[in-house]
Length: 162
Image (cartoon, rainbow, N blue to C red; front, side, top):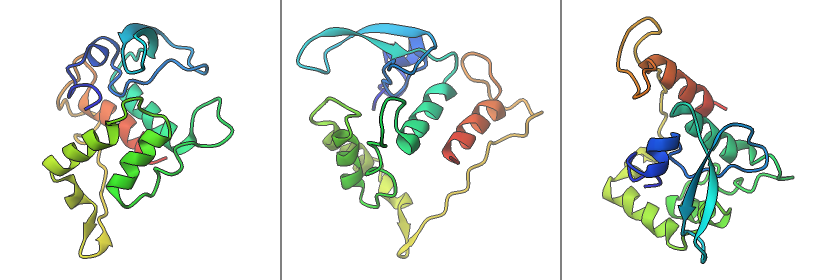
């Protein structure tokens, strides 16, 4: 949803699929874009990543550790949440999105694609095994910028294992 399923300007031009703004701790390149998520239309600075995995790793880090300027993790209420509606509300309450309808939009996608089927199985949490895919020396698929499948997937896998 954040990146219009990978087709947004920010996703295509900055490899930023989650609208992660520059922030005070970012030292990498930025991508400036007009945004109307707030009551005022402004030009905002977003993080620009050399490859897609960077934004995934940053989002995982943001949820697990908070951001550099915070004394606490404002996303703590999202972690280990078992009710998806409470989790999407917690993401909004933490300040991740400025769209007041953000939780409802996420909930509709979760319901449309029946994503709750991955939540529980016979009352037990489902265990998901993360795999980087083809081995490091197997060609596999390539990202749009030519990175091998395993290399990209392994970075994402390591970020999810935090």
